[in-house]
Each structure stands twice: as structure tokens, then as C-alpha cells.
Image (tube, rainbow, N blue to C red):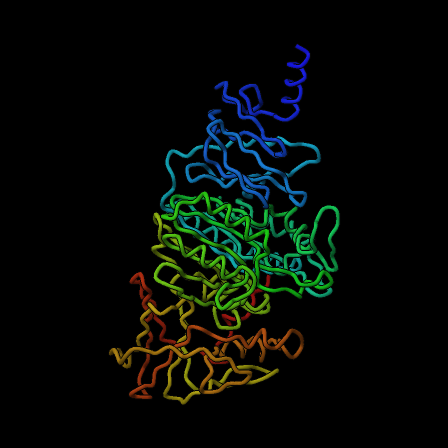
Length: 538
């Protein structure tokens, strides 16, 4: 008998359990032993108390899935801050304080964490995803611009939608850089994106290279690497860094794709994933059927990268039915097609040229993108500007004379083409857009894309939007009175040109997107037309 009691005592020490007597239990009487060494576990139930099988749970390093008893278990990483679940497609996105809340903070010596989810009547196979890149706010003035310019347009879009809407930022929510420490701005920016301002839409967050703890940082007892130390403040305010969620037939992932290379300066980094992140992603995707669509949200674009694990990630993603990579960072728009089932959308910035104007360096207006998801495909998307004269959904291009003068008191420019050449900047164009030019109301021909080339000064080979550069550099003085000049002489991936048959004709450009919508422009812009580029006052 003593031996039996001893064995029972040993077993009790070796196993905990997720039982019907535990808080959150369904009363089923089922028991799941907790394996020795696992010190993070819990039960997931629905809003009726039923235990939920197949829910993916993680601490950001390891991944587990709930069993038939609704129980998950894993070994907790010493670097973990949260435990969180990947919201199933048939459950509501839970919110707290107007922000998505799918996680809970880990506490010392506490091993059990339960979650209760709310079931939907049916998965949302049709929904919209709003992608907001680079709000990049560093003070209350820029917060006000974000709240007063961007969020009302977001809210109007959401409130006019006939399907559910969800949002995700693509990094650089704030602007810590050099000696500028904007960590204290994270909470105000989180609050600016609450459902109160978004029309009820929950907005998820992705970390950017400027969303970091103020340097220098170093490994310590809470962070085993300085890369983790850099992300802690963002993590504490916005939640997990690498996580996923599901809507309909889409699996949506956000990941930090920044690997800092020195703990002494936050501007020293590579576009990369760490070994731990790569292992986490593989584990997360191991629970996703290959016939699903993946929407992969990062800050720095993945195109043309050979840094650690980026190619591994791309190779893994292309195993799925359809893949859309959502990125920011560049402050210009670019659409890159890897294959007929993998596409990278690089978004112009919400803040444009760092809030000094209403346009990015490539001429794309400050704004965001809206994607309409149907099952396993994105069957519609469009760009939306946010400022006066550019916030109508029909505003999708701008037109210039080939030799149009631009600029202002700081510096003057001129497009590097002849006067009989027409240029059209079609902000969201890719190879499937058709851009046509009309002379005197009659179709004259198709405009041709200008091959990407960036120059410091205008040339006939340049693809840049010298009207936007003329404002940001020539009128505002960026690169003269402050800022790095190359950040404002941005290249452009969506410029088109056409040589007029009759240089004296009236001209109209019609751009048609892949979904059959046509947009027109019959106005030539020059340095006398900078009212739309000039920031408002609040």
C-alpha cells in the first residue's frame, strides 16, 4: 500500500490535468494529462462552455493545438511575454479597449491560462482587409493628422461596407530613430486605432524597424538576445510580434522581418527572420491546409532578398493555394508578381513623405489599401487616398507634360522628356492594368510603362515623379533644411508615357484596373498645382 501511495504521489507530481472540474471546463469529465516538462497549458471553450478542439496556441516560440478536451500544452520559453491563440475562422475576433485581444500576459509561476471564444453563426468567407503602412508618428501633431485625416476615411469605408472589415498595420507605427525616442507615442497611436475611430473595425499590428525600444539595448534575464530587447516596448503595448488569425478560408500572419545587427543603434538591421521565428512559422503553418490562402504581413518587402530565412519563408508560402504578401517600409507603392498564385503588395505610406506633405516620394497620395477577400482569393483591391482632392475612390492617377516644371524656392526641377510626351502616374498599377491615352476625345493608343530608374536629378531615363519630388524637396526643402535627400527623391514603379500624335490636342488618360474599373485624368499638373500636396492645418 505504501508503495502504491508513493507511485500515486510521483504520478501526481509528474502530471497536471485539464479536467471537467477546472475553471472553464465543459463538465464532460474528460481528463488530459499534462506531460512532464510542459509548464504552459490551459483549456479553450466556446461561449456555451463547449471545449474546442483544433485551436492553435503559442507563446511566440512553440506552437500547440487543443485536443478533443480543448486542452493545449507546451513548454514555456523563458523569452515569452504572452500566450495567445490563432482565432479560428468560425469565431469572433475578440477585442478589449477597442483593440484585438487574442492573448494574455504570462505571469511568474502561473502555468494555466484559459480562453473563452465566441462562435460565429458561420465563417466569414467574404470580408475586407484594410492595410495601413507606416503611420510613423513621432509626436502629438502627427497623431492629430493621423486621427483627423486617415481615420475618418477608414471609418467611412468601413461603415459603407456590406461585408465584415478587418485592419492590419504594416509597421512603423511610431518613429524612434537616432536620438528621437518615440516609445511614449505607442499608447496614443494604439488608442488612435481603436474601434471607436475605425467604425468598429479591429486593427491588428505589425512591427516595423522604427517601432523599437530606444537604443542601446542588450540581452538580460527577460530577453536572451538584443533583438528581443528591441521589440519589448512594442510587444507590451500592441501584443505579440509573430502571430496568426483566420477569417473564412484565409490564414493571416503578421511577423517582424527585421533582424537588428547591433544593440547600440536601432538603424542597424537587416531584412531577415531569426532562427526562432522561422521555427515558429513552420510550426504555425503545419496546422494550415495547403488549399487555404495565406496573407503574410511584414514591414520590409521580401522581394529581391537573400537574407536569412527570407527565401525559406517564400518557398514555404508558395506551397499554398494563393499567397499575398503585404509590406510597407519603402514609402512608395509597388506591386510585384512572383507567380500566378503569389503576389507582393508594397504599400505607400499613410504618412506619405513623413508627414511633410500629402504625397509619398513616388507621387502616391498618403493613404491605405482595401482588399476584398472571397474564399481563397482576393478578387478585388484598390488604393484609397485620404486628403482633400485625393480622397475620392476615383482618384487613382495624375498626369504631367513631359517637360513640366516643378519645385519651389529650395530647388526647381523639370521632367526630363519632350513637351509632346505625356506621363501618367497610376498609383496602384501592375502589369494587368491598361493605361490608354485619348487625343481630342478619340483613343490614340496605349501608354507604355517607364522602366524603373532612379536619378538624383531629372533625366529622360528616370521613372520618378518629379512633381512630388518638386514639392517635397523643392517647396518643403527636405534634403536642404532637413532629412536625407534620397528619402525624398524616391523611385516610381508605376509611371507610364505616350508621345502625342498632335501636341496641340486635348488629352485624357484612362486607366483600367484588372477588375474592370476605369479611372480618368484630363488635368496636367505642374508646380502651380501644389494645393493637393500641401498639408492641412488642424
